Image (cartoon, rainbow, N blue to C red; front, side):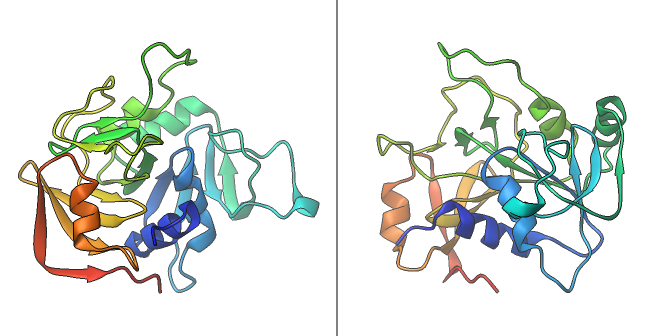
Length: 219
């Protein structure tokens, strides 16, 4: 069985470390806010101007004035701060974000990421994606392993417009946890019920199997 988007977010939460400043991209990454381990302190940053973002609110606690970069309503934690986007991108561009978690439409075995535009479809702009991939100390991609047609999204070379070059080191998909090392995908973990062959058959790029590959855990 492959993971759903909530389980992908839950697995990524294991990569968080005490004291990290973390930026969550639009889509699956925003769900990571709901799974931060209780024994660590992590500060979530949203590029629209918030430091100290909390989990998604229950319906009775929604404040329409509090939103993340994806225009979703959120909560704030005690001690959080609000500021303009210029200050927010100053934090990002000066390398003060320890970890960025982004969604993607494609990732190449070289570590390139395409996550902002599909040719022929209207988009409002790149948003903060280019700044994030250019400035983050570490980037994890949260994505489905294949597209709706069943074609791999982990490729030898991206076919969509590239957001950043040689910047991705780890990918968590509905099938696996994969590192990128020396221009190759390295399979580190498989989702429960997913075989190594399932991952191989769903990956177009060059994939090597780590000698200690294991099954994912979530605790």
